Image 1 (cartoon, rainbow, N blue to C red):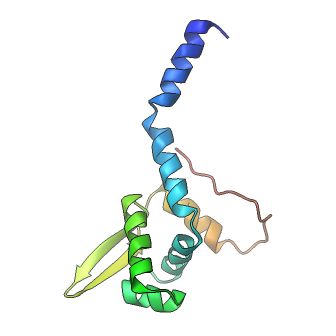
Image 2 (cartoon, rainbow, N blue to C red):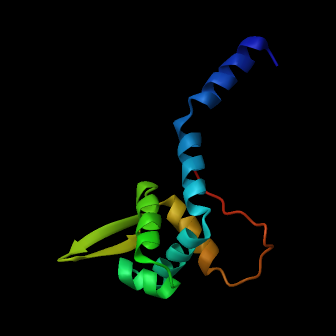
Length: 118
């Protein structure tokens, strides 16, 4: 590979926002608690923090922290109704992949990774 081309490729990889965004999204969704939240939201289109915490058997603070990370990664969105905040999955390519993986009934190898179209 030519030296100038190699330098250009290294610079392109270092400054590629899409790669950084994808890495962030996968690090956020790679947590088991956050995937359980996504699973719940696949089956129940909108849930409150309390409902999610009760279903998971986890403290509300833990669920709130996980929801905050998922919201920052644009996986979930929130809606306030009086004193309650309700969460749902956003509609984008990442959540579509998450839905497909979590709702697929066929057996897959345990080391299968989800794929996202960028």
